[in-house]
Image (tube, rainbow, N blue to C red; front, side, top):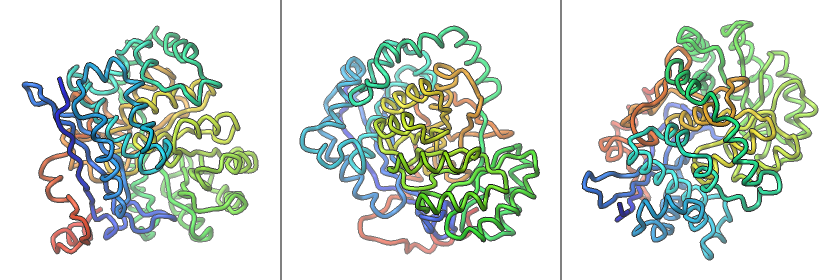
Length: 442
């Protein structure tokens, strides 16, 4: 099976008009993505689909970066890529001229991640398996062979990675059966967007509780007094047994984060997410020391496995929030999950954005079945919008992700949605029906 072409499209949803996704740093996001399709010469016309999440303006830059990497994947066979997955990953992330735009971070890494994820989607489809099941069924040697250990072998060697995976082989089938039967625990962010008024927040919290959620996250950051008022509303609606998390989306400096959490700590938050710059490892470590026992969670903007390595080494975070397409796709995600396991850090993937719930359900289920074997302190974000645009959308029922059954990575979008929301270069949201649709969205 040969990859004969790559298509990439700029897809944007006008969520800024409804304030869905609003937080302290991103007040009017248009949830968007660079969407990749790898077409093959197979008789059944199998395609590999991948995307990387963006926030509106700038998606066209990621699209251009994907096109700059196109020549590294088109013309290759899937068997060739599978046989040398580590080398394939490195060819995208370390191309001798393009790597200057990173290396292994920023726009070029987002583009590489979209392509890498599309390859894994294609691989899972050829096996007739959902992505998490493909990863679980691979031999430890195959998984480890996909990881680039350069820059992390001082804390995780290939032999150690093999040992972690082999140690979890016993009981794997029982854990798989459990996931299929009961699903994976989820929390919701959909009630806590910063742009919502108080009445809407209370209504949505009550609806979340009725839907079976026991964990809920709110956005904080711009005004600690307003944050405290909203936290009291949410805590009262959630009840004392409910679990409340907070997310500052990088808005604070280190001192400001510590001072703010000393005010907000009275509402018993389980964690504060992204309290400061995602690049400030030592700042996170100080915040963690000074606000304990409140946990510190970070990851959605952590650029690669090397920065995660430093977070783990510095004991700077309590929760690892990998993002399925901020880092370089499945290969790098598996490396980070294994490092987290070695350091005893629970992985709670970030899922706020287009397609991220669809993506990360697979990663969390793989982690439980093949790496951690535990639900302790592990839970996956759920954001309840835009799922209707996917052929096999993620499903949460009674506060738990239902295990996906369709082959692939669950990221294939409907042609009608792609056509409707493709964003022409240089234009703005002007279609009256799109504006009306967004303004009435929940």
